[in-house]
Amino acid sequence: MTLPLPKRRLQNSLLRWFAINLRDLPWRKNRTPYRVWLAEVMLQQTRVDQAIGYYTRFLEHFPTIRALAAAPLRDVLKQWEGLGYYTRARHLHAAAKRIVAKHGGRFPRELSDIRALPGIGPYSAAAIGSLAFGHNAATLDGNIIRVLSRLTALEDDVTKLRARKKLQALANELLPKGRAGEFNEALMELGATVCTPRKPLCAVCPLKKFCRAFAEGDPEQYPRKTRKKKAPHKHVGAAVVVNKSGRILIAQRQETSMLGGLWEFPGGKQESDETIEQCIARELKEEMGIDIAVGNHLITVRHAFSHFTMDLHAHACRLLRGRPRAIHCADWRWVTLDEMDQYPFGRADQQIIAHLRIQRQK
Ligand code: SF4
Figure 1 (cartoon, rainbow, N blue to C red):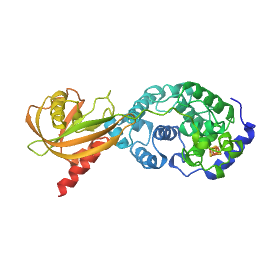
Figure 2: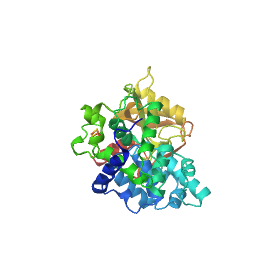
Figure 3: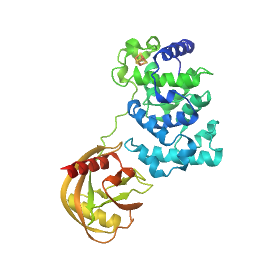
Figure 4: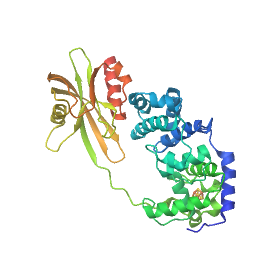
């Protein structure tokens, strides 16, 4: 891929702009490899404004890699609660353990060692390596892909490997040796604040004189992507089973499942030939080996995951027979509403908890 203009001018324009316009963000202070790594992982699928609070709290709880490695996974997931994409938290925890075991608790310096950590792909390794250790490695993230594909008016579908290779080659070529971290970060910052997906602020963009999409007059048509299929919608039943002493049954999701390690109100997906009440009763029998009476509807929570949406229907339930067993769940507990704060739940289940607390006050 040929560059629109000499790269030196483009580099200088961007770096000058970044020096003046960089936002004051917590991960830009006291930079250590651990802090760079945590920010990189958090920002993979989370907006900056949402990540700031989580980032600060996470570091308060786990100030060092050793502290993170020594913590129970439940505590790590608790600090991640509500951020979504929980595999990131599990990988962080596993990687911290590995860093302690293999690298004496110091974040590894070599790109190949960084890349070997759980949850770190080539782009993340390049971002961490350049920002934390000054490696001359170009990274690609969603923001950079958008900026580069607009700069070059790239016609290829950026979800395809062929386009990624072209963009990586372009990013490599553009990278100013010795200032890789700063340049990577500047491209990300430009994508996040100026070259935004909708209504890019081309008038104030330091790269507009190099930008083919701007010259064409319609930058929003880049990056080119094949349209995603509409995500399927599911109905899921959840049981709020209360025992004689007023405690509520919660179950831990299996490690290998989506939201693995998190806790939930037990239940599952409604089949086509059953009511939601029948679904809840069947799921509790299959998952935990107990018979329950399914009573009043409590709340329906609508939630969107990356690949499907769901309506989660919670019902008040009563235990009829049996003692819970972890058949298709990792663990279970009878807990009070207040004790639920000690367990990490996904967003949808947190809304059920909030509803139960409001009901308690009535
Ligand atoms: S000129 Fe517009 S489209 Fe081109 S890089 Fe700048 S903000 Fe993006």
